[in-house]
Length: 114
Length: 109
Image 1 (cartoon, chains in turn cyan, orange):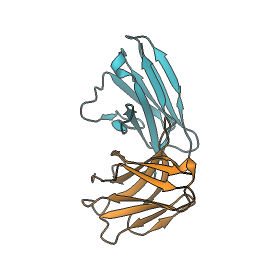
Image 2 (cartoon, rainbow over the protein chains, first blue to last red):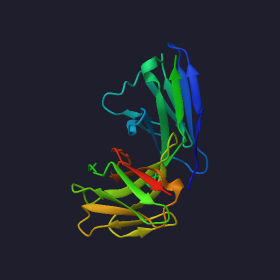
Image 3 (cartoon, one colour):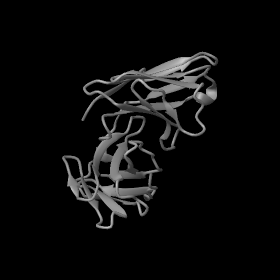
């Protein structure tokens, strides 16, 4: 299957700082990328949908000023967690899709805020 | 997007077929049935998808009932590496994948 690379795989940051997570589709152009978060022993929760060149669409209850999403090209989307707090600690996962075919997921980023 | 219902957990003996059921009684005509699995602390892995017809690939088979209200994912010869959480998702043309709780499949030696 297609390859989606997420970086970093793990990050520890201090409370109050911002963290950027990158999601790249390596061998295809992604018309749409999605961002999820997952708490331990829970399912994935969709945070937002981003299309290249347009503003992201956030799911209900997700703060757009807290989780900044940029989808500047067909192969790269970034999620920035601003002013991170311990409750933002989670597993963040991106997926990339080309024209509503199957979505391919990155390996995830484990964020720990201390 | 239609809601799906799966049993929370299942066991399967290594080497035997694993049959994972999914109910999607409110699925609409343009929604595909997708299956993904997630091994601990990794991103989900695509397995297979279908609309009306049964599908088979190198990983699994997908059997969809004629009324499309349910489906079954079949792993023909389960191995220990197939132990994972399996998610059945009904996806519309929005492209969004809304994950339910999935089925935790434990393959035992």
